[in-house]
Image 1 (cartoon, rainbow, N blue to C red):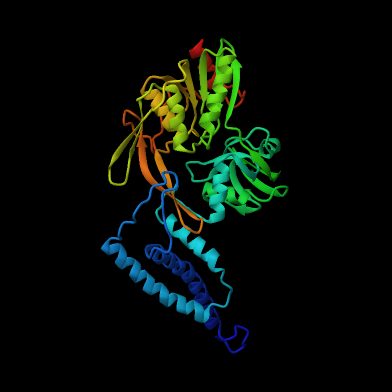
Image 2: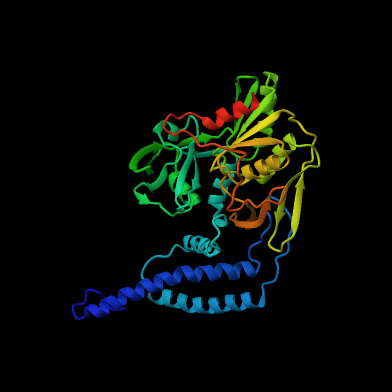
Length: 412
């Protein structure tokens, strides 16, 4: 390859060399994608359902898929030859492999399906257990595909710094993150304990900067309080692992304090593990009650029913808002359909699909959308949400909790 500093080279030739280098760089990503696909198809990795722990046989690829993969593999083989011959930079093969698989899964254009490296999967599990190093916020994605703060976790650096519900995260350490997935934004916010992260948010029309120290975060899933008129208030923050058992313990505590009616607050609860939602439905609904209908990629229906004797017999009001999603909607849908609870607040988020996790032998994981779910009455949730029985707007200016007040009024 000619030296760009050679004075005899024309500007056109320099531009050509630059374009060639850029093209070769793009080839790298595409090359590794097919390498991974071929590796998976040739059984160098073993896939299995993580949550269901079933042994499954991989289906044979369709004839068209196989032809496409073979054609792409041949094309990328020639690309790799060009890279090996002309590319002048260093290549991190593992990083390119990981990023390429991510790109391939992103091609599904499904916001909930993703590939996670072994490190990312370990972090995902830690989060599900309520333990991680970060700043302590729940996040979601708004209608513009931007990540917003659902709520800061009480007693965490995020709350102390002043981050608020509804803040749109614009920059992380001066890097623009608008349009990025919540998982990617989360990975940029997290880091080593004791270090600081700079976050820029858009709050209504004002841009605000926060420098927040990362700390070890322990999430407690359930908060309770005794209110007037013997009303027990239970706030369920997330459906992480162990939350059902924690809710049961907290419920028994406030019942012992004299609670005769219950407010279950699922506002800002963006979901979690479906089995935890089903376990909580077991506490509230009679045995053998239909809770959830799931439909797979082939149209097969499966119905989930309660398996335990009913624990909670009190009158219940459930609070929801636009950030109540996924497992929250499963529980709310079941309680509403069976007339077991009145629902107060705003229309829920509308995440009516379920993901299963497939593990690779190297510790990485594929989270894939495999089911759509419906309420017991077969009401669609995905992209629709659940409409409350009493739709109540909050008073932002006075910070009065009008939704909670309505729930108390209904239980008086």
